[in-house]
Length: 350
Image (cartoon, rainbow, N blue to C red; front, side, top):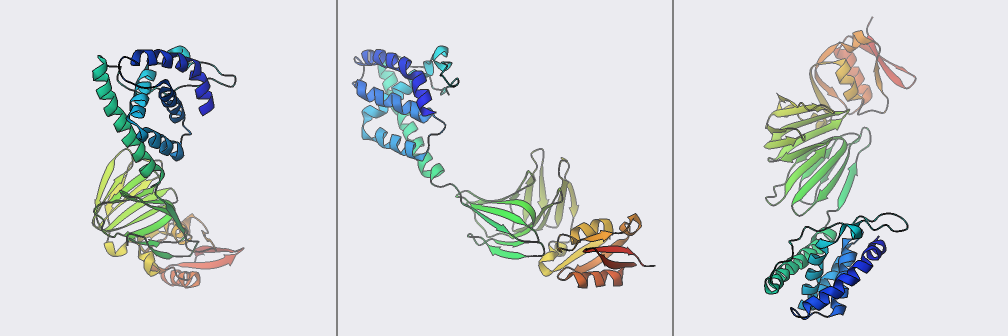
């Protein structure tokens, strides 16, 4: 890419540089060799592939002499006047589209230009140094955590934040200088935050940004559904179309693909009860209970018919053991459980 850009501009730059040297000889003392180096740096840094090593080398070159600063800034401002014919020059392989920089036109007289050019060049050098030290060297490192079906995991992040992972959950964590970010690929997690005045805590799930302003909350992101429940403090949900603020004792639910967020009250004692090995249901149908139970066990539970699907249940179910769970359901509901072909069929008792 760099070589193609260099070839496209080579002839035009040579001609422009020669004219520039003649013009500058009466204004500032910059040699033709320095201008050539500045021209080469401009082409190299215009390439999208330019990385940390190029910027570090450029910064070193720039800091060697004030003449380098003036030369590069003069060349950069000169190139804002690249003619269309140079931009659309066709190479043997393809057409190279040059990225023009939005720079002010060359001011007059020369003394005014030199003053502003020096300032602009110093700012550019500072930005280049910032980019190499902060963007390339300080990119946040992502750490991944995951649980299998039926597994739980308690982790403590480097800032002291406690995270409880529910069954079949995958997250990635990045601890940056200004933001602590957790991405939930799937599953459910409960966050008990460590205070940090300098860094926000952000959770990304199913296209929604969840920013914590409080202490503890849970995020469920599975089955094309997102549920956020606040146990302590305040949480903001930004769906891209609206921002919803949740307070302690509130939950928000959003179906994937829908813009509406439904907010409802929730008993904070019922938030993430899975951390204690139980699930709480209130007037819920088996059609909604069974998919939730199947998140915790390898052997799937299947409803025999629509009649059994309409049966409702309120109470607590133990999810630490599937046999214990089924025994409780048979005792509490008018149903029976039969195992067939590695599946558990729930049907009405006769």
